[in-house]
Amino acid sequence: MTNTDLKMIERATYRGSLDDGLLDLFVGIALSFLGLLWLTDYAAFGGLAPALLIPFWPIARRRWVEPRMGYALPNRARRRKLRMGMLTSIALGVIALLVGIGAYASLGSDGFSAERVFDQIGPGIPAFLLTLMGVMAALAFDLPRFFAYSGVLFLAGSMAVSFDLEPGWSLLASGLIVSVSGLTMLVRFLRSNPVLEL
Amino acid sequence: MANASPGPIDRLIHEPARLALMTHLSVVEEADFVFLQKQTAMTPGNMSAHLGKLQDAEYVAVNKTFANNRPRTVYSLTSAGSEAFDAYLAAMRSILDPAIG
Image (cartoon, rainbow over all chains, first blue to last red; front, side, top):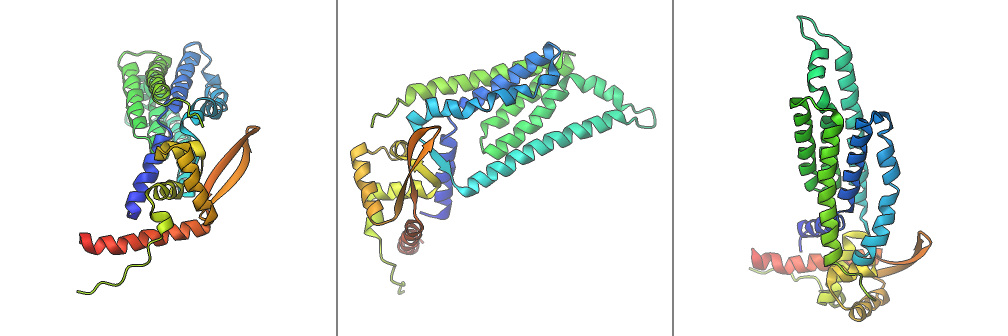
């Protein structure tokens, strides 16, 4: 067994521990909630979604996942990678937001109007920002399916731009798709993994 | 062509069930009984027996903690266990690599 084999086993073990769909379901619910807040003009409270949901994730894992899959603490290297990835994801999101705000606030010469550009792509900006964070989350969590979710967000944002929709619709639609994906995975997980009787 | 003698094979680790336990414990910080059973597909009694042997050799440590006010028993490799596992892998590679080429 080579070091590469052990890395593959570690990666498979780690990824398997997140195949229950709970993370996807929580992300989908948070996105949907954010979309609804946007559509009801309460977008400023968008931070509530993750703040309300995050505490429930470990509770849900202990209730539904651990009796079936058990508990394992990832090794130090993995935990360090997760920490750095999450910090980078948040930092990139903030930087992208600041760059966007800065670009919007500045007007270019020669007739170029950043304001006009942002007016055109404005409906898609929230989804595009979350796409970026989704890509970082995919890298941070080492979960390739989050690249697909990022693709859904980007597509939804593009459709919002094309049809001049409220940004909330792209978030709500993406959130519902991710939620369905997560729920499907969770149902499959619960059916395939009965509680182990010891 | 003379090959260097391979290092001794640790028979305690070499047994397939215990090798599976050591392998899975080597890639996580700690894990509970249910996790190890799920990964190795052993029966509870069989796994308990093998874990007991690894504990007796001080390759595996048991830590009884609490998580959210519920007792939790977790297993982890000791430093001796980690070194023994590395030595076992090195010994196996020294045998297999020349043969595989």
